[in-house]
Image 1 (tube, one colour):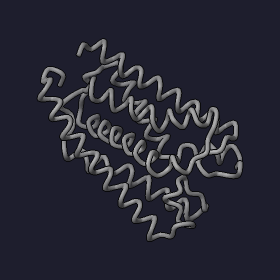
Image 2: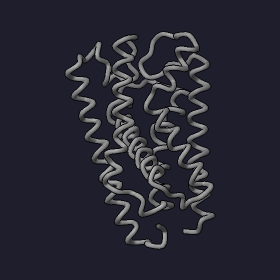
Image 3: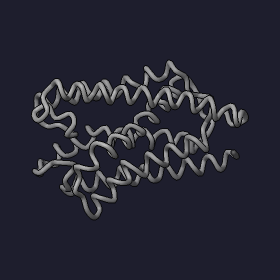
Image 4: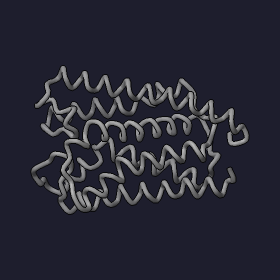
Length: 217
């Protein structure tokens, strides 16, 4: 693929991710409900909760990586490879968990519905398509999978600690007050396994795609 085409593809992903995050932020500032929140806390609390959602963090990672690749579609480096793996695994899990666990619980309409689909469906799909068709190839390796697990594990620990102190849980499947610690920890173990499986799947897919188009690496 020509570098100009790859830049354009990654640029589109960056724009869509930026629109999704900024739009969601605007709704938060306006006091729109997120997931199962029934009350309207102060603006400072709403903003703090906004950056506490794994969905928002994974979309921000997609935005950052896409901007880098829009400037240089062959960008590389050890730290970059780890960040790229963490980004792709994170946004993939975001889409999967939303589709199977959160989507049935949501009752959104209007702008809230539209931005929800952008964050949880459109951006994950676009990020995956861009990774497949525009690369860069040959950057995924098994050691990165374990490294990519660090940020969701850290997020989980901080979220549980914060929830224990404040009583606020960003997602129903980690609501200790409703489910209890045993069920929540089991859910998080399941999600961690999903992270690992996605990571190893990306490694295998990257190798297969690199063999098909060795010049893209």
